[in-house]
Length: 332
Image 1 (spheres, rainbow, N blue to C red):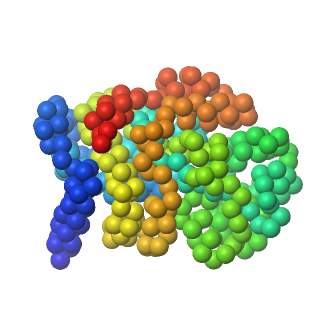
Image 2: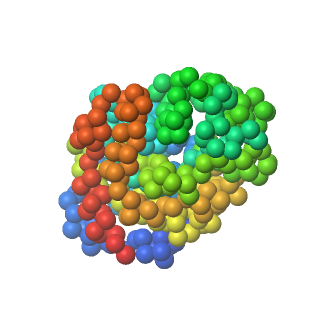
């Protein structure tokens, strides 16, 4: 029975992808060099927003991969690349980790708009964070702390002096917020969807619609440096499969949400569907991935949170050749 279920999922996803025009380039694949490896390890962090990575399995098989493994990783931690070959992390995580010898290469943007700043009745704008309790999992290298610090600095606040940071990995800041123990926190799917359903707090900043955040990627696809260097053909095919999966998220959020539930990546269909319907997964063609890193790296550098210049981080930790080739291939 499990074999039949797996086969049905594979055929169903491939049929849906074919109908959406996402499969149908066997001649292109046949003309490419042979895969250096047919094994690939992907990260799963529990965040719904990186759904393209989760639903790419069948597309990866169509690209010639036979052994596909998903491993639990902590979102934004560079150490994840000790056990995975590819993972999708928040852009801030890439920059903070790249402020030194990063073990990964940034390959593409994935989508914009996944984070939302939630506040209680006392918080109506970013400036209202002054003197308030703001929850983050950790300080320093935490992307949540870094991003909120930059947002605060943008409106003239001193993040170190003006905000009362409350650090807690367990219970999560979202739980502290729901219990009234903090005044604001930065949420990622499915946290915002859950709080809205429960009518807890309100959205102060929505990165899907509020500028300048809505004009840049939030999550980006990264590959382990050694894998990218040793397996360029495999790297291109992985990027292609995940970008096709992003198109699938955009064209059929309902079907993709069902697959996330069926494959065990999430239990809540409604929250998954809401996330996939709201996030602009098709923006990988339009937005400039390098511009995203430059924008965030400059602000982190100005805030003193990273030492390296944007130019140095980009030069040492990006490779856009696969993305540029695929933008030409997947124009339609």
